[in-house]
Image 1: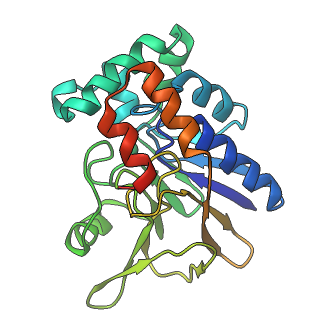
Image 2: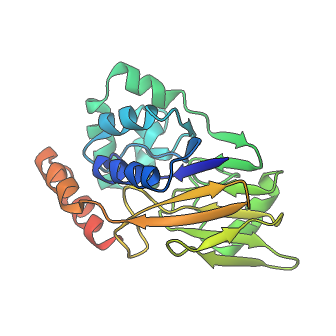
Amino acid sequence: MRCAILADIHSNLEALSTVLKDIEDKGGVDEVWCLGDIVGYGPEPAGCIKLLREHNPVCVAGNHDFGAVGKLELTLFNPVAAQACSWTAEKLSPEDLKYLEELPMTVQKDDFLLAHGSPASPLLEYVASNSIAEKNFSYFEGLYCLVGHTHVPLAYKQEENKIASISLSSGIGLVLRNSRIIINPGAVGQPRDGDPRASYAIYDSEGSLFRVYRVEYDVRATQDKMMEAGLPVPLVTRLEVGR
Ligand code: ZN
C-alpha cells in the first residue's frame, strides 16, 4: 500500500493542489494521511478543506484547526497566528467547522501513530530536539509515529543508548526496519527549514520505504491572496524564505 503523508497545509491551496498533482504524477496513492493544521495562516481555508476531503483523508487535529473552531484558546497562539485564526473562523461554513471540530487528536493506522504535535501532547508540543523525542517514545506503543507542527522534515530514531536525528532530503528514501522512529514529513503550506518548496512524504509499505518530496509551487499567488485578504504581513513574507 502507498500512502501520502501531508502536514501543516495551513490554508495554502496553491501548495496543496501542487502537492496533490505531484502525487498523481508519481503514480498516485491508496490513502492520504493528514497530520493536522489544514487551516490557519493562509488565505484559502475552505478551499483546502474541500480539496483535501475529496481524497477521503485519515486526519488528526492540529492546534490551528482547533483554534479556528474555538476548541483551543487563542491566548495559546502568538498575536499574528491568533489574528489568522479569527480570520479563518469567519471564512468557514458550519459544515467545515463541524469537520474540523470532530477531528480526532490521534489515530493509529497500521504500524503508525498519527499526531499533530507529539504523542505526549498531540496539539501543542513540538518534537524539535533529541530529548523531547526521547521522552515521547514512551508515549506510544507501536513502532512508528508521524508528527507535524514544527514544519521541518526530520526523523528521530531510537537506538540502543541514544536518539539519532536524521534529516530528510527530497527524494532520499528512509527504509523503516523495525526500529522505533518519529518522523515529520515537513509542511505543505508553510515550510520552516529555509526551503520554501512544499514538503510532503509518500510511504510505500512494500519495502517499507518512506520518502520526503519537495515541490515548487506558486508562492507569489498565495502571497497575493494573503495580501488581498489583509492577513498579517509577516505571515506573507515568511513563505518566500521558508522560515
Ligand atoms: Zn502548523
